Image 1: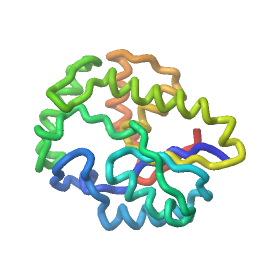
Image 2 (image 1 turned 45 degrees about the vertical axis):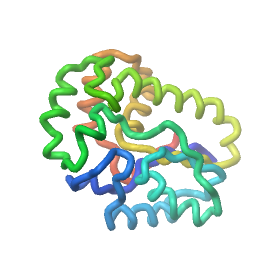
Image 3 (image 1 turned 90 degrees about the horizontal axis):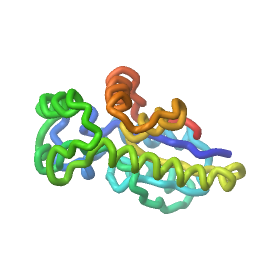
Length: 192
């Protein structure tokens, strides 16, 4: 029995599709297949956490139906360093210059516009989940907790917990390198 952390299945945003908002990006057909496959790979859940973004709910849905559960929403959504207003109806390729400029700055407190978040605020959200899960570890030695989140969120979670990394510009640069070169795959999971 354990705490499982799962990245959402493939979404429209992962395949350079046009998206309206960070929160409303749906799964692709392959993503729905990946979500269904998780019912064969993951054990019976006693409790499920998801983010408020639709792609985590859609990924968790087959598990929730299988195990007759309702999900609890936590503040574990993707890192939104570009605002929805700026990114509305754009593709990954169209956002690339904005993304590159953001990461080149390596300023942990930079907020690019209203509705965006700083790397420092993102780090604090990840730290909050770590504290929450650390408080629940004893309870989930005999049960299973499944946490459906996002690639960037889970990448920083791993860096903080496995490498004991503190907030810094160096962490921000290393995090960006990890996202580009060692990304957690869609529907990939690990045990905490």
